[in-house]
Length: 208
Image 1 (cartoon, rainbow, N blue to C red):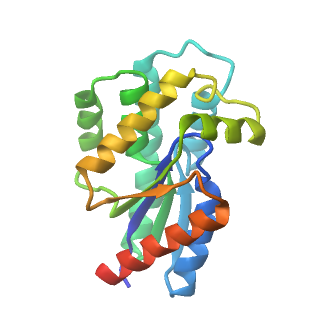
Image 2 (cartoon, rainbow, N blue to C red; image 1 turned 45 degrees about the vertical axis):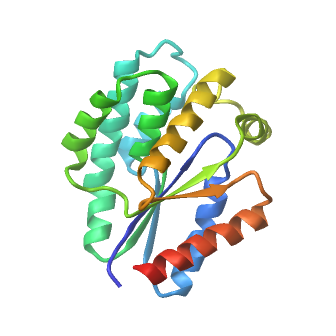
């Protein structure tokens, strides 16, 4: 079976990490070799950039610097991890990818989407995810979950309106690319979300 690039995205508290663990188990039971990774991060340099992006020590980072750091980490991630894994026939499960940049820097912060598209083309070329699972839930629910999980990072400290714009952008992109996106109701229990995710994967595998 050839490699596939599957991304899992969504707002705060959506349960991406938990569901990706289930997805890995599901795919490995079907004989797939799976590489699990995340953005920002995924490489030594990427994790250092992640620390800069999420850290508390500089709340005044400019939008240009933030966006360019995201794509710097992504360029390294693609070169060191994602492209080699796909070339080797592995499935890559990635916690967030460029859709998050459109949602957070574009929708949330108001960066013109055309600027993101230019960077996307430069860094990725023609590479796009084969499948994106959007774990969607109301903002208030997600923030409450995230608040119980850990201390808020630099993004999680934004106001509710910011996250409403992020969610709206995710849903807009999903509506515009129905062949790639599958929207999952992440407000359900972990067990119910897992069942829905596995149904999506089964249907997608059969159709492919």
